[in-house]
Length: 200
Ligand SMILES: C[S@@+](CC[C@H](N)C(=O)[O-])C[C@H]1O[C@@H](n2cnc3c(N)ncnc32)[C@H](O)[C@@H]1O
Picture 1: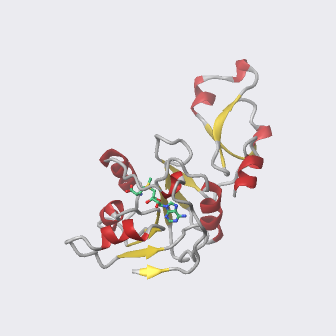
Picture 2: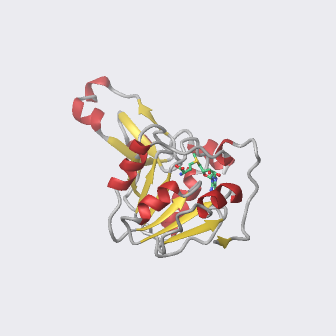
Picture 3: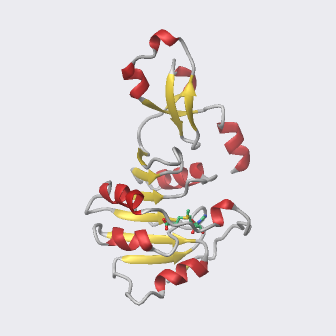
């Protein structure tokens, strides 16, 4: 197992430090969105239960977990780790992300550092992030390299922001049609951005 020296403190009472595995339907949604050539960065991999499943269908998986006790549970299981699964005990907010990563997986509904992860993956030109961090219950695949517009340009409708916030922008009701209601506008500079900036 690899250990990183770069670790920022997360207090024990912090939501993000709590390990809570997700259910099979959630994992299946993630697995369906992976490609055979993918090199995955599993952020907050817990006991590697999803990482093991992903390793069966993709090229390589880096399973990053900040809590050594949880990660050790996954490493020490009777079934040895597949050769293409690399467990890393590190803080994913500050570790060196391998530049070969093609997709991030962030199953962390209460994630308060979405923008940190999105920024870091974009820095290495990673094109996709599969996550439930923005919509909480729903897993989405985010195109990290797609252009984003300022929220002020959206006249009415749903938005998902680079900072991790989501919401509905009110506007002239006559513009709200089934088509505009079905669109999620990828934006920057939403009202929550300032708040997130101060937290991160
Ligand atoms: C909600 S659990 C999900 C675990 C795993 N994805 C699963 O489905 O079993 C979130 C995990 O992320 C880990 N975590 C939180 N912040 C982290 C960070 N900055 N770097 C690495 N792991 C982190 C927590 O310790 C916890 O195990």
